[in-house]
Each structure stands twice: as structure tokens, then as C-alpha cells.
Image (cartoon, rainbow, N blue to C red; front, top):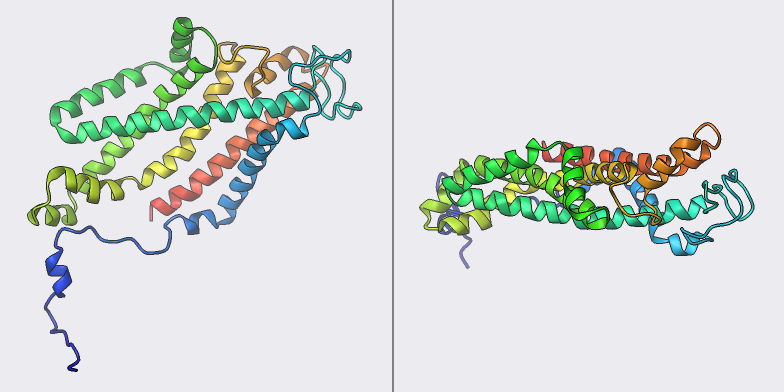
Amino acid sequence: MTAMTSTPGLAPVEALRKPGRAPRRSPRHPYRAALSTARARTGLVLVGAVVLAGLLAPVVAGHGPTDQSGLSLAAVGTPGHPLGTDDLGRDLLSRVLYGIRADLGIIAIAVPIGAALGCLFALAAAVHPLLDTLVQRIFDLILAFPGLILALAVTAILGPGRLPVVLVIALAEIPAFGRLLRGGILVQREREYVTAARVGGSSGPRVLVRHILPNAADPLIVQVAVSLTVAVFIEGAMSFLGVGVRPPEPTLGSVLSQSMPYLAQAPHFAAGPLITVTALVLGLSLIAEALNREVRR
């Protein structure tokens, strides 16, 4: 059998047969290195601890979140109430744990909805210049409303509850994901592999789906982590102002709001939700920063 030899200066046969294929990624997962850094591991531990605490709330909490006792503003370490009680005698540990469940449930629904709608708008903008102009005006309209005004407007129409919180978070995230993906598509359209794919006979939708989107979607992973952080703040702010989830159902923001009149008398009242929100936001921020460094390489 004669050994195959290659002639210098000539492209391989496979390369000639597939002129329009985008460059393949390394077999190694692109974010594995980012998530293995000390920064990302710290963030994963913090977020994981908060999520685990919320999931185990029915097991860990010794009381229901709305059960009242005769102990009002009991101190930390009170028998049966490790974090004390609130002004109505409700166990603070239970309130914080079930508040985590409520917050995580809301942001786990709202952020994907906002991301999906933003990406759909970005894809529509990539189809035709007129649609692009329309989409940009929609983004401008959403961004024209400050978050608090948007929250108050939605709540005024629908009333307080979970649905308004989900809608406000989703609406706030649509421009972030939409503009990010639209910008990535515009950048990738000018790359040589896209030109090669078009010269090779690939249709516009095929080039968009098979070549442009896989290379333009990387920053969206970072945006998910950032949006989760923003969602925690939005939900907390709405509950703090009393336009979020209806009481007596606990959220971290509502528990923190209820503690404000008693900061001098019972500072432990605010400690639980405040530490939990700080840990969750800090963890998500560390993960987002580690992923962002990987994307920028």
C-alpha cells in the first residue's frame, strides 16, 4: 500500500469540500477552566449553599413560615428558634429559608423568560432592517422606564403577587439579552467563515443558525449570571416596598422590610435575610466575573 503524501501549499481535500464550515471549538469545554478558578469556586460554594438551604427548608426549618408563637422578637439562640423570632412571634430561620425558596422560584422563571424573549427579538432584528429598527425602538421603550417605575406600573395594573414580580424581571432582562445577541450577530456576520459559507451556497437562515449563532451566543452565558444577580435585587426591592409577593408569604425582601422598625431593638431580625442576599449576590457576581474573563480571551 502506497503511503499518502500531501503536497505543500495545497489545501486538504476535506477543506475544499467544506468551504463554509465555521472553525470548530476545542474539544475541551470552554468554561471548564473558568469554573475551576478560585474565584468561581468561591461563587459556586456561596450560591450552592443558599440554594441547598432553600431546597432543604421543609427539612431544616422546625416551624412553618407563618406559624406564630408567644415569643415576640426572641433573641438568637432561643430554644426552638435558632435565629430568634420576628415581631409576630414567627420563627426567623423558617422565614429566611422559605424566603429563599420563594426568591429562587421567581428568578428561575423570570430570567429564562426574559432571555428567551430577548433572543427572539434579536433574531427578528437579524432577518430584516425594518424589523431591526422596530426591535431597537422596543428596547428603547423598555429602557426608558426606570426599574422602580416599571415595577409600580405593573403592580398598579395586576396588583401585588408573584406574577407582577416575574413580569417586571422578565421585561427588565429583555433588552440586556436582545442587545447582547444582536451585537454578537452583527460582529460575526463580518467574519471570513460566514463569507465562505455564503459563497459555498448556504442559505441565510442556515448560516445564521449553524455558523453565526454558536459563535455569538457565548456572552449570553455570562449575561445569565449577571441577570440572576439583577433579578435578586429587583425581587428584593419590590418585596421591600410592599409591591411584591403578598404577605404573609415570606421573601428575603419582605422579611428585611419588616425588620426595619426594630433595627435598634432587635438587630438579629435583619441579619438573616441580609446575610443571605449578600451571599447569593456575591456568589453570582464571582461566577459572572470568572465566566466573563473566559469569554474575553
